[in-house]
Image (cartoon, rainbow, N blue to C red; front, side, top):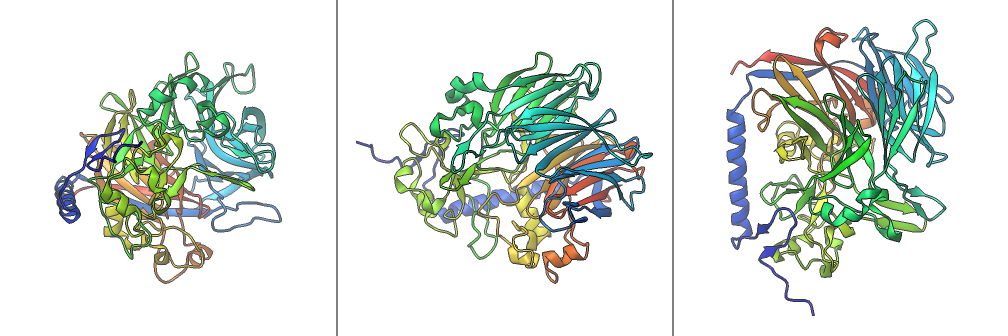
Length: 584
């Protein structure tokens, strides 16, 4: 017999929360008062510099050259960027094409070479030592993903040339060379795919280290690292927020992990590997070439942070709820600050959903569809909000085994992503700073029509998609990059839905970054449709998948810039990073 449900205590792995008996309205008033106090403190602590992003130029790229160059909104013509500062050549990959772009005239970028690989999909590009390193998903043979190496652009022959192909495994997602180019680390996501028909294959997630001790192409040897030794440690890992999501057919943790993004420490002795869907980071010792540890990233407590959880609440209504966010970062970067080592993370969020013919499986469910019998640990107030589509009913939650206890009850309500960015100590993933709901609040204040907005129907005007993503990860913070200028550390935080870049600065206190500026490449939200702006070559930086800070010493302008790749808009832009003393 199941004991009576404990209604005044939420059983949660992180952190423990005791529910108050005060009324919901009083609770909201307290939350909003705290929020206003916090905003007042932040506003009072103005930075002594003013940072703005201003677009200098944009180039639109074809997503294919079959039957001539083809351009289209939403075809992912730009996925990732890499820069050769000596020769002022920018390399991009997107879909089947790798491009070389001359940026020596930053006001007028020019495509100087390209190669196309039909049946393949480029997922990443890096430049090191005169070579272009790319990751490629093999669409025709998913088990045989590759790292393909090209020579840098030759201005005499006006070509880039393939040098080497290295098989690395199923669905490689990122490549990262060490500074001396002697090692290239490859994150092999091992994302599940359909094989055979109406069935699923979930290959192992891998970290592959391609070693070039005598230079690229000679005496190469490959180390392939897997996560098998962590299979029997899942219960201990889960306590820190690590997720073992897909367990059908006895799928082990080593196959469930999906290595996606790579960051290297300052001396290239350690690699950090993002396991996004697993809400975890793995560390790799590059000297011994072993996976040393897997760290869970815990959960974000939304009990005291108002957020909008519904696309059917007739507006932007921010409320606090007893739910938790799985951080699940996408990109992240290692940086040093006052002698310490840190990681800055873009907490996008992602769920595993498999829909292959007759085989269908999903780890997520809308609140209104969660069976009541699974809610034993959920308090009465929150359970009632799950049946209300203007509150928690529309939001999507994890309902995989990793969110449940031994009896099959949800331990708490866990939603996807952190709707912002955070800074963690690199040694142990301790949280130093989290942006809370700053992205949402400042978007409402300064770019109201773009609040939780996306390019849903290209024939709509942007404001028609207002609030559309509130029930599903919000802005989906996608990318974050770090710059150093005049003793200040700058953070450029890119949000996928639909495409904004927030700039923050830090001088002395890493736990209190100061907001600077919101940039967007959407010229208007009412008047023209998404497609009309695109056809007018006016729509840029939509889904900022990859951004790259370039200091003045390496910039084609002689001043700091940001290269920005817009995945949905198929664009590359140069944004000037303008820094002036603050007049306040």
